[in-house]
Length: 184
Image (cartoon, rainbow, N blue to C red):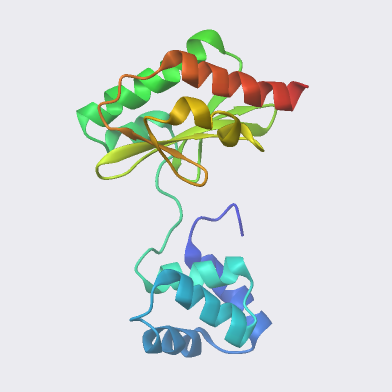
């Protein structure tokens, strides 16, 4: 399933595992269409025993997202953004990759990520009014909280302005900490 981005590719397995045709499941979704995403997921999991993957595929499909696949390359990702966000994201990755050229720039979860030895070390995603940067690794974000006082820090991400002038030292230090975790 993971290699096929079409959410409908889950439907045969859903029918087989949960014993009802997709028309039944679409009817169930229409009855709870006014609920929020987490409530719909919980309904399928709690009331029908759905796995997270099957619930996610059905909920997102019923909300109009028929495919999990959107972009294949960094340039495709950037092409969907305005010029300011493009420049900022390019500057973020340049600041990191100038010092750390070994990690590969990949697309995962439809956003640009740096990966080293098969493990993620850093990612960026664009929201409507800001960017989110995501240092990966257990404890990385928490260990940098004292240096993040000027930013909005979420559970796993740091919110920066779309026109942010990247703090290269901060970015490189977070990446260095993650690389240390990986290479030990």
